[in-house]
Picture: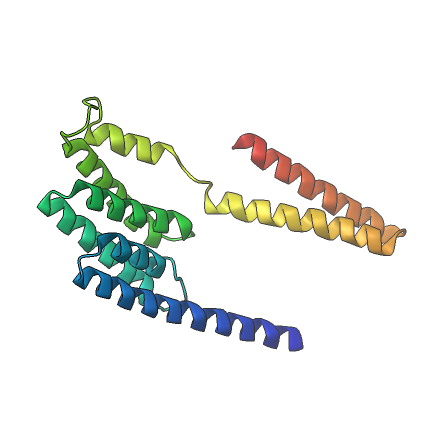
Length: 196
């Protein structure tokens, strides 16, 4: 009962902190954008996009700020700012990647923006860079899937838990089971790394 209360309290504190961070970062992004300080606006909007909390509106607003800065910069021909904004949007989406389509939609939008800007640039000596080749390159560098990271976490927990039990208990029938759990965790961990 006490453990559940502690867990709920920790989740509440973390959620409240992330909501406060998100609100502050969106306000700072808006202030920087009003001064046309685009790098600062992008940095604050990205921080807001990464401030995830259940039912918090701030990550969505951070992504929207990044999208607006990128689109406006693209419209006025400021390729550097546009690429910075779309790159920050993609980075935030990758940093908060989890189950569900939410961050994936922002990542797709960011990659399309990056490829569009890179493909339209004529001021660089890279005629082989086209919008399609840029988009293909961005999508080729995949991060591990959420299920892979979850399986790795469970494998590590099984290894550490099993070995800790063996070290703590020493001998007995349950020690054999703990050894098997630790071994299964190790095999799972190694298999996931080799299959990557």
